[in-house]
Length: 471
Image (cartoon, rainbow, N blue to C red; front, side, top):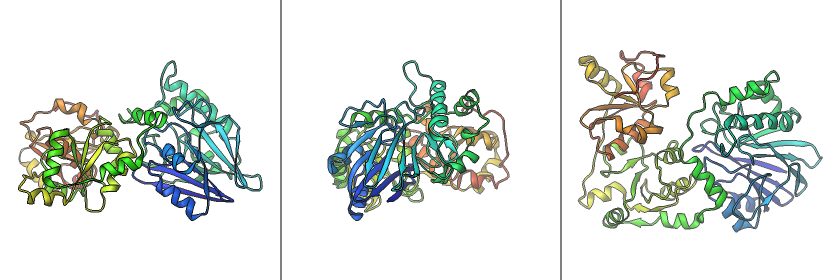
């Protein structure tokens, strides 16, 4: 028996490969199929099952394409109603895989179809539990993503409590816990950076599994402090439930190379978004006017999902040479399939063709300190971190302007004012600055090094007052 975790840091997502005696199961695969087919081939195995723990909100799973390419059976837990062929397992149903058994445990709460998969080894011993978004390391799945009809988040939290108490806690302490996500995912509130644990450790350390926690207390703790989920979450649920375009077709379209002249023609004719994915150190020095920066090196896909509201938005790509396909795949992972191609030769080719370029002004924290001390009353400092980060510690002079909701809050800004923008380290603030530039706010200045650098200046102060909202 072999178990392998395939962890993707950009999405904080874990897929799993289980193999026994030439048969394999894939749990919660990402959109691209190649990693899984290659792993099966390497192990001399046939993919028999593609197990889905639920209809995912934060990424588009590769279950449909993988089933078409391998003949594997897609499996969901009870109550799931997909729009494609799949086996809807019964609670407690056992799936034979080589010399091992995978037992389906229906664990509603995160969503109503949520299920976990218990791996029983060759000796009949409970070996590991693949918990999806039901149980994380240090946390549990948020219960507000599947609110509909007569179900509230409190109702779902109640189901989750029962699932944990009746299906998971009774299992042995030495059962290995393999969750669907780690720290950084928006599917929970306070996940650990660890991506594997044991049930015994979780019973001791996970707040949601405390033996003294009754149902009413559990519901209160699990629902407290939930923030609005990213706007693309329900759209990805729909794709996972109803189907999507072949990943091969998406890649073929998105990796078409365009000359600068062709790129401009396509841009004009499609009203595409020009997405620049280069490094945050390179982008501000020279970029195509009107383009938006989301760097490939960081949480690229989640930020694309949070900020690009139209899933059908045509997208043209600026990327480092050799990374064009990576950009297309990572966009497709969160449901953005309408990539049209990329600019061959990048910004250099654009300039060589005689086209204009733009820049974003950047200053160091030390320079900002000098300017601020000269005339503190004339400053507009935008802190684009999350509200929770802002409330923990911020510059008293700053206004909280979370990047997550920049499209909603932009109407409060004045195009004639100058804005100094920062986040924690400089990535999110450059995204925000590029969006503002593309919308006609040309007096934006990105602060290099973000709050980390600003905290070492004389203008840094700690404040726990309610965040400012007026600009």
